[in-house]
Image (tube, rainbow, N blue to C red; front, side, top):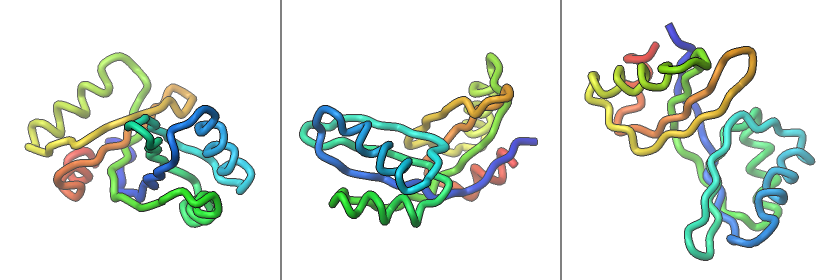
Length: 131
């Protein structure tokens, strides 16, 4: 079985400008917040960050000081073995359960493990399927 749970992700909207990644991540570091997973992209004039952190309350407070817009989303996280095919297996399980994935991102968490983050049309069913 996988270590799977529903968690809260922070969505942070910033200006899209040089140095913004360093500012966002530096703000978290200065607040003593560990970053567990990150997705960042630019959409025109906006930077959009999706963050899984060790302490969302501290992270949100620190980021709002900089006047960044912060909201929360419910997501599913699953810790998997970091090996060829692990992600495909998770994708197949969710597909077979008719769970639609809106987006996904992931990161290595060391010691041969990886963390995948999913926003789905049915997080409860995704957790039950993968748990």
